[in-house]
Length: 274
DNA sequence: ACTCGCCTGTCG
DNA sequence: CGACAGGCGAGT
Image (cartoon, chains in turn brown, blue, purple):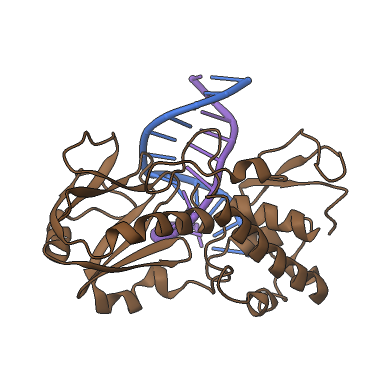
């Protein structure tokens, strides 16, 4: 489940080898991702362009290539990898861009919840999925964003998942940040005192930075890998996510799981209070 | 402000 | 074989 740290790890592992490369050909699988993969659009916007920059916006990656931009989202199971052109493509490779150094950028996504869209560089500014993103909790102070929802009745775990509030947080890091902040996931946002908002903001930044340093979270399913196909090792540092029934590393109490808005929330009833 | 459907692989 | 994983957009 690529969230902000995993996308940042991909960006860092990809950027140095992608920037300066010219796109020579583009092929697609024919299957739709979140949006249809339009081979005509890909060829129109990518062929002959040179990648100048690779940027992250929340969970999105934006490659700038001269007057074009390629927007990617890894969805649930997406990978962006660089491989040698001509080597066998893994199953579920939906986009392959061959580059001028004999490498090939591949977008691989078994579950096809991801996104790969080419466009004019000037269109990025108004592209709706990017335009609605909240601020970046790794790069910016997210206290103002968390304060902005102080009237909301929505459970704080769900607030953290709202990409228009803070961009890039998914279920793993929402749960982990709440554990570090000592706040119960179901706490209505408006019930959280300002001191706890400050604590949550710093816990969020801290857990995201720790996860980036560890190369991201690769769960037992092996879903996530960086651009070289390497797993991250933050999974060993998860305090609550996926640990229902196991003892809390801080107090020993059994971690509990419950459904919150259709997806699992995890917490320690001793360490986290409403 | 909710729920549902999309999609595939894995696990019990 | 059903449950589950879950980001996100569409529908209610």
